[in-house]
Image (cartoon, rainbow, N blue to C red; front, side, top):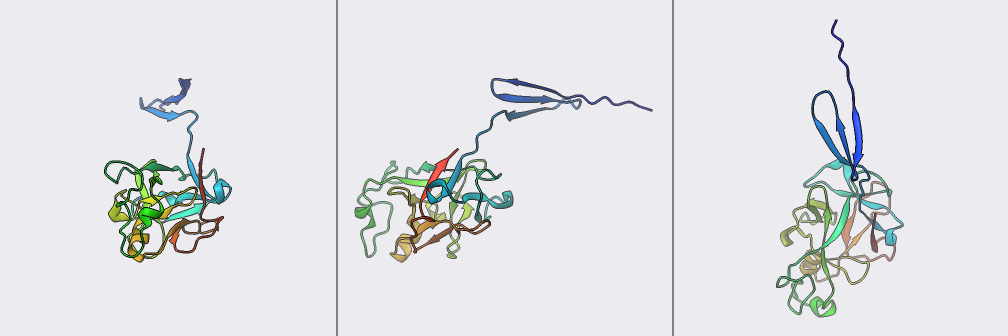
Length: 191
């Protein structure tokens, strides 16, 4: 009979947990990992969630704060002549209304799921948020004149402002729609 001794040594050095086991493999994990959350109702509502960790093409849904798969944050999108602010000609396609003028100098963002580098966007025309690549062709650019996020692609294509809004229920879809509601369409990023 062969006795297999299993031992685990855990040491916390410099905020990183190192787990060394009898297989000789080392597991590195942040001892105090911080997950960024992007939540509706100015941060008091449901948060963006990469539902079931589905990855590319997966719908982004809403879930309670503190759950897994919620590591979303807003990042500047340097899309208008190399800067991340609305200019007189960028980023909106002004067919009927001059949204570039209305939001001149407001910041342009992508909302990124940090573990994968994918962004909230939509190219399916169903008004739901999906994890997509972060480029303009994927509807992933948002102008934020405060705590509301206006989708550049939908707004340009329909000539109606389209906002990123919470589905308002646990497991509900994040929506990109033309109906603004002060609670569900205002966002805050927290840790």
